[in-house]
Image (cartoon, rainbow, N blue to C red):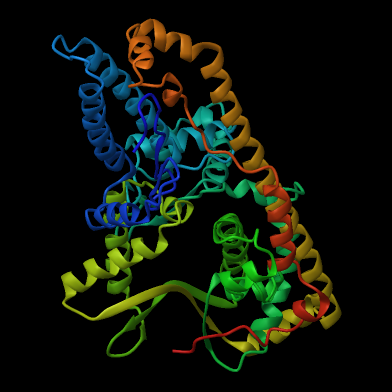
Length: 497
């Protein structure tokens, strides 16, 4: 309890949900945190619902504090102003929380911003079918946002199509001639691949394709089941420590290597790895005609494990979409950004078991690749692929990928901390005075110890000053390859169905 005249600081934080942290003047609140966390998880509260719940609790606290101080709310003026100010804070939070659900890589990119704004507003949604094909999508996004002046002429439409596919993953709809379905909105636009301005014949295509050709040619199976992480190790994007070394082992190396910082690195690497690997697989499938690959799942059940059927894949996507709606997310990447993978996928499995009355334990994404090794030998000879060229390519791929991850890490750091500074500057320079003018009796509430105007001061998230240094160290530990790691894939596991 606080003594007379003292003020108690109460901080409830769940901006990085689902973690709830409560700080009440340094008191041990772990039991309260666990109870509140359990309540939120069981009821699948979104961040906005959590905010509303806490606001209701704090409203009761304000009233109780007022009665304790002997202040009457008979005319409701003070109470109303406090609650109106709280409501303003809530509305601002709603806008911020909505923005947090969608990652904007480059705010100067009109196409990216427009597409993701339309996703947030519901004007476009994942799994939408555009019966008019690309033309309908151009009109929906706005051709002026896709680098063209009009839709007249084949050249203009080809430019628009190439630009559009940097942001959206689309697939044809069976039995419908022109129709396209929106499968995904890329978190990091694919144009980042064109760092060296060499387009389709660029850096990765010249190096990654030969590495994969060499790897596939040495397999003694016609069907390989693998993953993005495994292929990332094979081509040299990461080393054998990546997602193998435990959080506990990393903290033992350096206490600063926390789970949160490691997950930040994994989160940044994931879309970049997928972009590079799936582009390479597309080339080997569509241009060289050497492989056929499919994205499916490996399902773990009480009665045995198996590769998913097409119907099971559709059901998984359907249930993931349903749980995303429960969380209030438009993109699956939001789940990873908020560190909610475990709770998210547990909920998906629960819904699937309820619908099918089955015994799933879990599932994971996998890539099924059908190959004919005899066809690879001729291509390898034509491309003059040697062990020495493979080793050189892996080193070059590793260095280029590390640079991309470092660039994105630095960009995130500067953008996040820059936004935090801007928000605080705006509060100090203008917003604080606006609040006091709008709610003049807040000063009376503050003088009576009920409200501290500084409590309404925004607390934007910002990275610590040593964040970049730690992330770069983790990049060296988990990504950078050395000669024996780049050429040795003994630790790579393939699951053969």
